[in-house]
Length: 452
Image (cartoon, rainbow, N blue to C red; front, side, top):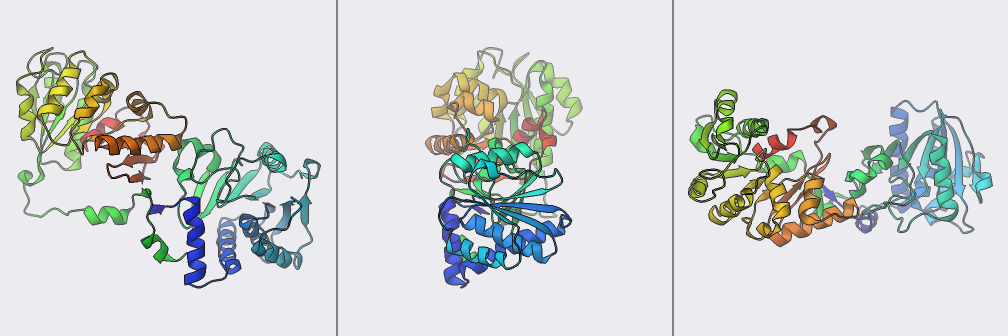
């Protein structure tokens, strides 16, 4: 699923209007109808709706929604921000329709007209949508602050007002929504941690935008979907044997951190490797042989991994070239000789590998090693590890751009772990994995990922 910018979303509306064809006001009616169905379908019809509207098309959605809710015998009050000018053509047309069925319409010219209401009321935020291009100020900012202070449930239409679609809103005033009802596709803003408290639960409602637009329009960001996974999924032949599925090497573990090696090895085996060899220190030999009997072991070092003996990085590194896949990092610790160990591995084993955990920490203090990481390798940092290696961005949007830049610079993949893990690629594309959950927020999840 492609993630479009605010400008592209406007173009998609225009494309649908031109090529379906459909009138702009009828497209607005679709959006309002989808929201009305969701609200009624979620048993909110007996509550008092307080709908706040700007005079743009987002406000037009809110005005149309008010009329539809009234037709469902709901109690509805409408509040319109008054700026001293008329609204868009679609807004004005819907306002005229609303006047035919309701007189509970109020124009807010200054804060003294701001209403108060019961905690059981539902506030509908239709002030500003994806078209907002500057921070809120004046009466708009004052109204948003007023709504946030009242503590009622707020449902935003398309976007929480004040939140930018595809740039950072850190420091800006925004509606704090309990629920966001958005249209057709996720917006980039919904996928970033800094906006989590603002968006609440996000529900995507389909309003029949023309499918040809998505096929022809390029985007930097996408959401990984089951359909995309199915395209690369390869079912196993029922006559297959372990030799068909590769031999993996994982360098993991050190004294007091052998659990990371166990978890990584388990992830690798569950992920489907045919054979696995764990390169571990002597202190972890019995742990791996007992806990992961399917895995083979090679001992490098005593209390931590070294290629022949502690402090040495020559000799056996070339053995890693014989494996189909190599992972390094979980629980290896941060020992002085690890910089030379990584340098030898990167220089001699010229094939893509997975680099995680303590291997990333070693990179962060030996950044010259970035220049020799094999092309197409995969780095799997959490946000703090990412910052230690590539620098600290000022917001989540900058973090995404920095990941894309570094992937292109070093020809590597970066899996930036989080609720919506972000995968930046060497060709400038970015993908979000939306299958995360808070239950994964515990030690060991990253070690399992390395193995997989």
